[in-house]
Structure formats: C-alpha cells, structure tokens
Amino acid sequence: MVDSPTTSVPNPLCDIGRTHPRDRHRMRPVEGRDNVWFCPKHELYAQVIDSETAGGLDRGDSFPLPDGTPGTVLRHGDERAGGTILYVRGER
Ligand SMILES: [Zn+2]
Image (cartoon, rainbow, N blue to C red; front, side, top):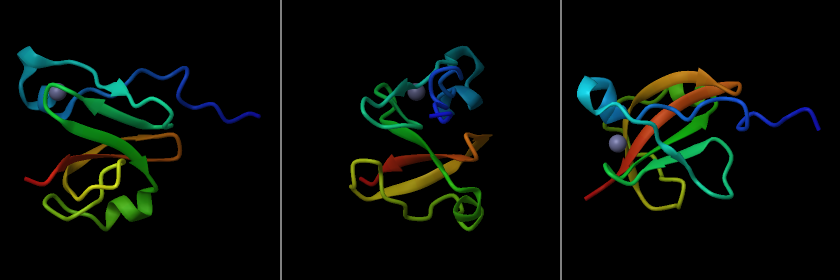
C-alpha cells in the first residue's frame, strides 16, 4: 500500500478561520473516514472530492454531507490527495 494520504498532512483550516484571522483553527478528522474533517464549533465539514466534480459546484449548491444528510456548498479549499477540498454545511 502506497496510499496513506491522511497521516502526514495537517488538517485543513476551518473555513470560518479563513475570514476571521483571530479565529484560525484546524478541523478534526472524522473517525473512520479518509479525507473528511469536521469543525464541531461551526458545524461544518470539509471533504476531498475529485476536482472535476468540485469545478462544477458553486457556493450555495446542494451537496450531501459525509453522513448522508443534505448540505450546502460553502466554498472550495486547497487541492489535496488528488482532489479538491470542499467545505459544506448542513441545511437548516
Ligand atoms: Zn470552525
């Protein structure tokens, strides 16, 4: 196995921290899931999806959360592990 992308790279910054420099913090990995992170403070997820899919999504589009419930695209993050990080949050 050559493919162990999650062990050596830092967790992504929470999307909220990107716009609030005094509140920069990293997200936590979701147990049992590769390349999926969660911020319990802001209740948003980041996950790596393939870049082609990510390129077809815009802020506000519907996208399911990693747990399968309906979510909304917040923004795109960095490229990672052969894909693009997508920030999503639950609909409410
Ligand atoms: Zn956060």
